[in-house]
Length: 132
Image 1 (spheres, rainbow, N blue to C red):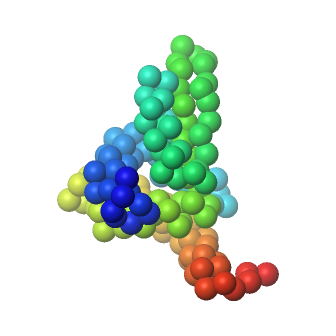
Image 2 (cartoon, helix red, strand yellow):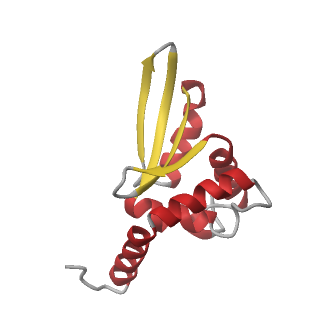
Image 3 (cartoon, rainbow, N blue to C red):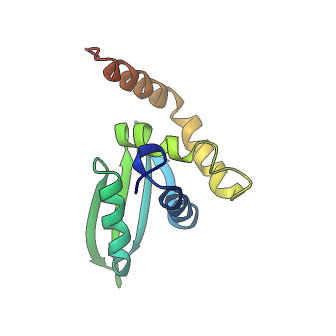
């Protein structure tokens, strides 16, 4: 997993984008944006890989109800803005998948003020500043 941004190789980054295009949900809770990935428990290794790549993200499950068994991975708040969104910038666009690109754009537009505030907070912290 060495090389590209965030310590992810080009392959790892491509795998992340593919997972999010195929199975991801781009939304939020009304206060902050989030990306959610929900898949069957047989894909547990992928979820463990995501946790290793994004240790500040959250993994929930396994859940078993309604005849389904699944894990749910979520990236929101700082980990979404600092770790995940930069990996999607300039990559997840209409050339790859217009529908997923639009969902990502809609999420970023809806939560633009939150994302900008978080980016500024991250910039201040990276310079050793105090955000209080």
